[in-house]
Image (cartoon, rainbow, N blue to C red; front, side):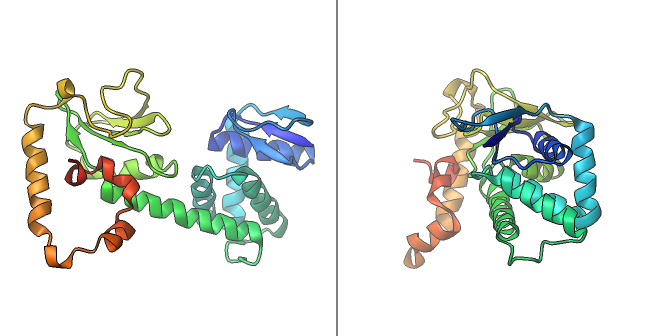
Length: 254
């Protein structure tokens, strides 16, 4: 048994793929730092190398195009079990055939990558629809969230364009990192002493802007006013707005 250990980044995975090709070996698993180690295995630790990673990415783009690069990144961000091996399988087949293979859904790993890509993009759309900002005492619009997949890197570009004249921060409470836009650029952040509830995402009272309660109530009143009681359909509502998001929605909080 052979296991590769890498740092959990996409560049680290691409470096691991480079090592596999250079060493002419096929690892049984490629593990993140927190991954479940094999009991009896030969371990190869991969140090992320941006040059190696770029060479692999260039090869993927050469034979599969930019869409394939994006598809593999989306699959990686799903953090699904064994997704690293799926991506390695995809790269091996792509480099062997030297042509795009994304339409070859008869290959099980190509089909799985396709499905993961669709799921991640669907979660990105949910982030764009369901994120709710609250203004903090220091004037920053803050939005905590816990997406099913690691999709914030794919969503921040929308918010940078949409709210270019405001300071804001979006935070993934499940993965404990986020992005802060301070008017010029977006920076990745980690909050060591959060002034918000990790469970509900609500800012602590002392961190709320003085007018936030008024805005919150206006939003709830708008939500109530557009609702048609005779046409309430809770099942349909849950299909369009999964219940796991409700605790972050201003209009659903009590």
